[in-house]
Length: 363
Image 1 (spheres, rainbow, N blue to C red):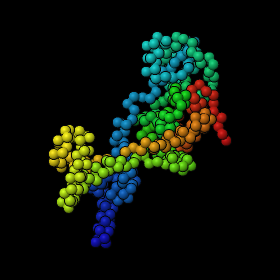
Image 2: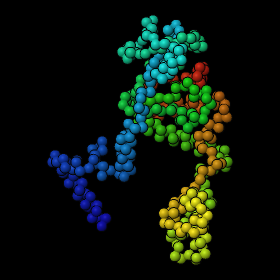
Image 3: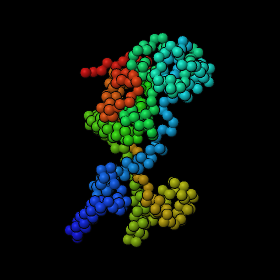
């Protein structure tokens, strides 16, 4: 039988190749082809699976991507008309609503780029003296990054279609860091297209798992608790319900009554059976037994510590360790994504806290 199937497959392949040579398009329309020009039905199963995932992912790209551009590029000017940074339209309207800023035009003394002139950049001018408006070094890369117009394109491939917000320091870690490393720090948030985002996330997840695995091994048993544990009561309810469904005819009457009481008490706790009389007299219906059989006896382990909590806790709130941690993730992003369209002024050694000095990289 295996020889016949193999022979039939070989014959089909020879017919397909002969049809292709004869300029017959019937074989092409019979099955979709991959970019290599080979019909998918002849590809290995794991390749077909990845191609199916890719099509499914791309079909949902519009739903998963950002609905509005990430950068509004509204310039915020000091009282003297000097550019300080770019902000979102939402933040600009907040300043205007509070009465501490007003709409302004582009300062003539600044050398604006052609993109800023052609794009009709909008500006607001502050009506109060900002603390850092005079102290900031306008020639530093951080200042250039803050004052430059950011493009709404993928920083890796330059695609200007669907975009996704990407956190260079994974959000699971970033959300647990002290507030000074998150507030007013958009340096480590960039734009990626869906395909580049998936590729980058694959590398990031691999690195995260390795970091968390190493820490769990080093820290010992306390940090190796499973995420889910069995609830003995729910497990007993499920076992009783399964026994009543599958082995009721072979069970003694006393055991049947015992199991029915267990199931009735569970249903009463879930408000399926209200009164005590119904609890004793009601005959268990098939739907009620099926519900008891479907009980999820796995519950969250209160002693479980997530991998992200272990990693951030291991930093001990040490400012130097946190800085190095952020720098390492920036290096990982550059090494894996190789971005060609990062905003002007973006650098690995830019400050990791708002308003702080440059980070000295370790050799």
